[in-house]
Length: 363
Image 1 (cartoon, one colour):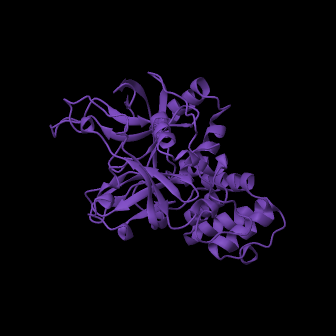
Image 2: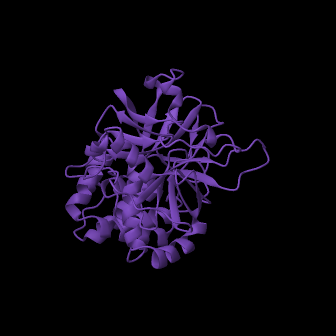
Image 3: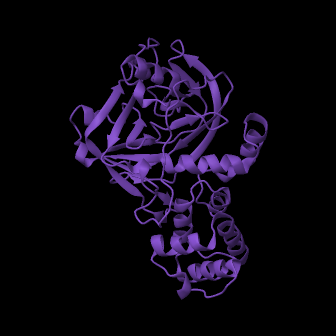
């Protein structure tokens, strides 16, 4: 990708807002093995940034520089906005107008920049589950803990898939045309990977069955073989780079109501492709339609894609409120369903407390 003059100016402004001169030099050397003095000897920081971005653009590493900057400063809204302008962000262009209206009218964020700050952190906590002939999405909820659906990892639990063949891949980025910008950080499961899980219900697969059991919640928390949440983002980080962090599950999640705005951050995958092909991370916008099973299921109209099982569902304030898991069950190939379905997070946290796993919750 070759940047235009206008894009280069926007790029420079975003970097200037995100870094001090010394930190930027450390970023170049630590993450990209490049000495700033080999590119620019100027004294003015803005001029230095222009020289670096110009060189990166001419020699084909402009996107790698941007990815490194985002990894070093994941919650910077200017970097995230510039990334979106290049087609690398998680917010589809068609949703940006409605997003701004939602943030202004329905959330506690002061503006879209504050929303982007929070979104930038959430992106770094999302991963794609790579499982032979399957896949899904996961959310980092502890230093080494990932939340997903039970049915995503069912093949591991029943012995059809070896845990050694499973990866949770963080940080994957690609252009909409398919060009990979960052292959991501694949992470293995720990030997004691199965922390807690609860199976799904027959009612989730049978449209004529509406009898959900209180513990049929289709969720799982698995352990990784490293505390990736305590590490900086990326394998090559500069000194002082912040730790990735994680989203601690709230002990008392906010309850959802009909017509509430929803956001689903998902890691779609082409499950029909040889080896399962990752797609760029996406943020989908929708709303609560109804509830079923005495509140054990929440139905919504947010668009999801294959590989999105296990995706976190957020309210207008980007607080996690549910776990997406399925669409409407049906037996017709030409029918796409009237709703998608999620597990309210309050039911999952109830289960964790009742089964002696309350320590997994915040506070």
